[in-house]
Structure formats: C-alpha cells, structure tokens
Image (cartoon, rainbow, N blue to C red):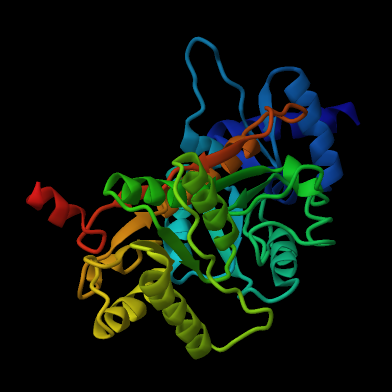
Length: 367
C-alpha cells in the first residue's frame, strides 16, 4: 500500500515539475484518483516543502536561491469568472482591463452577463463556478451601487475568492468584508465642482439619472459645495415612479432651464454623456448659451469628446478598475492554502478632461 502512495507522490512531483503548475482537479483526473485522495497527497507533499499548494492548484516549490515562480506559472490553468451587467458602454473597458491582467498571468477570463435582471448575477456566478472558475469578479445588479434591504446576504457563502467590481456594501453587511475595487465617483463629482468654482461659478447644479453611480455623484457634489462655501443649487427633481426616457429628458431640460433663468445657476454637472449630448443643443436652441450662460461638465467620458460642442468630462479609469480587480483576485488565488492577507478596498480616482463646454479655454484666452 505504501508503495502505491510513494509512487503516486512521485508522479505528482514529476508532473508539477514538468508543467510548473496544475489544477488539483485536473491532476486527480490524470492520475485516476479521487479529488479527496489527491488533496491529501498534496497536503503531505506541501508539508514536506516539496511543492506549494494554492487555491485549487499546485505549483513547484520555490528554491530560495535559484528558482522563482513567475506570474504566468502561478496563473497557468486558472479560470477567472467575471459577472457584469453588460459588456457595452461603461463595462466594455472594465472587462478589457480585467482580461489584459488575467491573460498576462497565463490565466483565462470567462465572462457572464446579468443584464440587470433580478437574481441573475447570482445565477451566473453559480454557473461559472460549476463550470470550473476558481474565483469571481462580481458586479451585482444593485440599483444604487450598494445592496438594498435583504440583498446580497449570501454573497460571501461561495467557497472561492470574490472581488466586488464597481460595487460596495455598507458596514455590517456580509459583503463589506469582501475585497473590492471601484471608482471613487464622489471624488469625481467633487473635482468637477472644484474646477467650476475655480472658474468663478457659484451656483453649480447636478442633474444625474438614477443609476448605481448617481448616489455617489450626489454625495460628492453636496460635499464639495459645502466645503467650498457655495450656495446650494435647487435639487433636480426625482420622480417617485418610473418614467419613460422622453419624460426624463423633458424633466431634466425643464429643471436646467429653470435653474439658469430663475435661480442663478451658471454651471451644471450632467450624468451621463448621452444626456448631455441631447440636452446641450436643446438648451442652446432656447437661448441658453453653453458655456456662456451655463458651463457644463459631463460624467463618464464615453462619447463626450465627439459632441458638436466637445464636452468637458469626468472620466472614470474603467480599464484600471478591471485590471486592479483582476490582479487582486489573482493574488488571492496565489496565496498558499491556509493563509490570507488582510482584505482590501481600493478606490480608483477618476480624471477630469477639460474641453470647450466648461468655458475654461475661453476664460484662459480672455485673461
């Protein structure tokens, strides 16, 4: 019996030495033994210092003087599952950044979509795990960017490393203990206010469509207005019931027109680019000059530079968010079994890209 165990150990070491890293499930299948038996073998060999055990994989033991395990060796055979609402618009670059990081480590990225359908992100995550994913990059369909009452309570029950992407959970929620990487949208809105105030504007409004981003935009806008001692602009109306896109645009247009003509607002932050591209020509058509009467900064910078009047925009570093999230997850997967570094919450700051719609270039020229 012992001879069979020793021979199996020798085969395990031989295969790991030849290939650098192997998934435990693949190794068990190749040797014709159960995963339980193989895990027991791996634990014994790891305790002897003859190989390293990671989450669901094994790699060659490091020789402190000669051998190092490269990022590509650590990632070989690893499958990263990623659940996002969509791969269009905002999330296209998030996925692109994650893919670049995963492939740089020799791993594979598999993407599933929730389309913002209730419960679909959880179903897609379970499907990815059933098909062999070792860890998850997860963007739950939380309407406000954080879980509502009763939402996401089981998110930490999956036995694999999980990183929240562009989402966060409040203190005390089970998901608050997860690693996360997100854009600091509040900082982006505050930077827009600061820039407009530096141009001399006092009344600075915010018109943000309801989305997982809008709550943070409102928080940053309000904080910056208070910090800079600016008068509060009248808040944009938030209808209690769902409205059509046409109705939403009409409400926002009416709000901006009233804010300029009756409340002395001279600058506005609009979310998103698409809204701004529709609203700015309508404002100009009714006699409100942009940027003369109303300086405009939009949020997202997906298509802001392509507008007839190029729009100053706050640009979230979407690609960086995806890359850093994937790198964080891969580092979790590379941790030796039984060890874990403290959790990380990473906030990535967006960038302000100045174009014509805020009037900065005109003011610089006049000075």
